[in-house]
Image 1 (cartoon, one colour):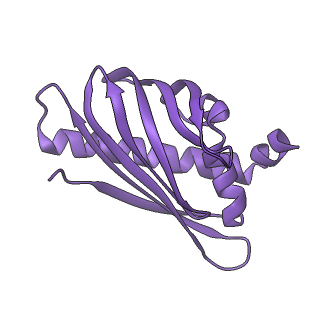
Image 2 (cartoon, one colour):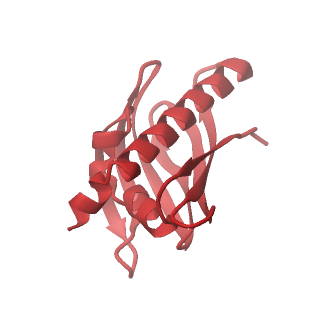
Image 3 (cartoon, helix red, strand yellow):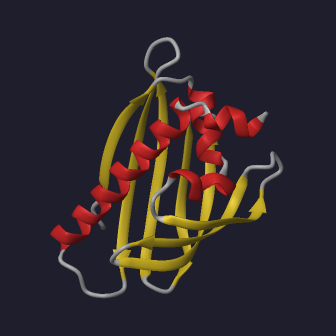
Length: 152
């Protein structure tokens, strides 16, 4: 079984506001460093993304892939890889937990498996960089109020 990498951050906003930014795939190129394009290919009955095509440029990893999303609750979403040229697996999740009034602890878990041989230590370091950048970008996006402005 593949090992995963996990990290957490506290964001000064309610969980619903944080999840609103996470669910707004069209805006990912605005706040994630690696995602150049994001296109929702399919949605569920509630209008949430079920399949998303992402064009990723993470330096060493440049790829276009499709992810399947599962919305477990208002505070948890996970995804898994449907197709990719470079990746064998890309499984992850965001879990949100209220951390006091208008504060949310966000835990991001990620497992990446590439088709090319790569040392486990290097792969985990890459996972950590992806997670840390994503969490920092999410925090800045939510706390700047940009997510609210885009919804209104």
